[in-house]
Image (tube, rainbow, N blue to C red):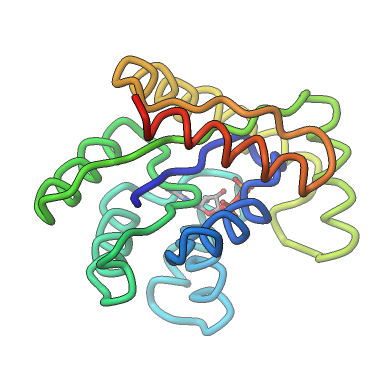
Length: 191
Ligand code: ADP
């Protein structure tokens, strides 16, 4: 099982990614989490990524691509993986296609979580208060949303044309949303 999770900042990708990956017995690989772990440990990658993350910009493709390539080469990802937050640019789509082709597998589905924009800002502001993420201030939140619209939203059409897209309403109880995702994925698996 090789699946991708997409959605605007605050759509609840991280929460659902963990649950759905657990359901399929595959690792949930979150590029945002890997970057944050590197920032916390003050690694070279972390120092480089932090500048972009704090401004709400995407980390450059070369840096992100290499990091993902190394991660999915690890043994636990051999039987499949759920990528949360990658790809986010058209260049990353190409790169991921190459990585998957190289392993002789294919992509099984792309989940896009949709949430009303007003609800999104409310969720992110609440998260800023509870978790204290450096990129959850109002200005940076707005910038992250713009970058998502400009650079990541176009990917939805790419995957729709490939017949891989599962658009799922992200509003509701966590369990409810999980069930919608599993139902939608069952649909693409059959087609
Ligand atoms: P959000 O849920 O707000 O979209 P993430 O936790 O997924 O945030 O990612 C946090 C930050 O990490 C992003 O704003 C970006 O700077 C960086 N990042 C994560 N994934 C990618 C990616 N695929 N390409 C470039 N930058 C990324």
